[in-house]
Length: 219
Image (cartoon, rainbow, N blue to C red; front, side, top):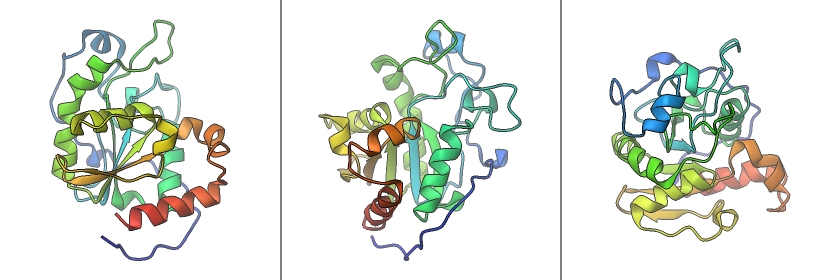
């Protein structure tokens, strides 16, 4: 489906409206280790008629002393960390998809602690336990595309479709039909590692933004 043309622009992310948070349950105890390590569940947020569902990996430890961008582990909303949250929102807005067109969530809703105060990769079991929430969100929003940021977010969506992920970097900006979800997945780089991997793709940020815009507008 071709959406209306969107000019490139520079965008400064605004903190999301807490009224657009979408908690799917009052509590969850599916993953005992995550229950122990989290401060709160980081639910999806944004309009429920968004063009895109943007899926991250999991919330990080966050910064409880930050002014607003404390991270989903403290705010209860996905992609609200000072670094990754603002960066991915800026990236998509520069590609023409601002806050009214994006619903932000995570494949795993709780902070997976590494035992030393930082975050670890979510396990396959944790991704599977949380996947019904992600599927419910995608089905409710019914987006034009699901933007998966990073390997674990992409793998979580692909696992639901029975698609094997062979080499994440090769999948970036390569749309994949997801018939079970009724949409298309578009893998992107995780915002925390974007600068590291853009050179591997032989793209500047401006070229990356333009490629995102073209890819999403053709979904």
